[in-house]
Length: 211
Image (cartoon, rainbow, N blue to C red; front, side, top):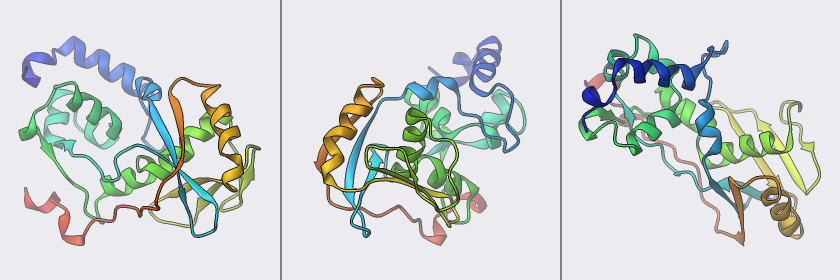
């Protein structure tokens, strides 16, 4: 089904209202429907000797719907405030085809900066567990102990880089029981996996100036 026949005006308005609400001062408000995405948390060794917690989100960013298409369906400027997770949900639901997508994820692209800050596996795990355990206030780069062997940190990095780690392997079972006892949307794989690095695109990968 093509996007122009699928997205009637009433549906488009209803979707936008549900997804965005009132924009925050930073211009980013996650749609409520994205909170219920099911994720599996896994553990990897870190250089500090602790176990970094990550989600099973893709290690690399996914293509987005082109700005001119998003803005033509809703209103000018929508692309700049639409959460990337909403792009992916609409793409996975069949609203858009390959010809509607692009990959603006060079290192100088703000889309890459935003993906790295909120959607790559380490940052996503940090933010999900902050929400689950009610972590709201902690000092810049200072750990906030909330029990369960958890160490939450914001690092001095651009893009934003946030992590949550287990102090050591002895906390794995207690952490798993605490997480899975509070929500059906997060599960914990207790097997420690080999360490992986973060995705860093080559400088030439951006398509922004090629269209």
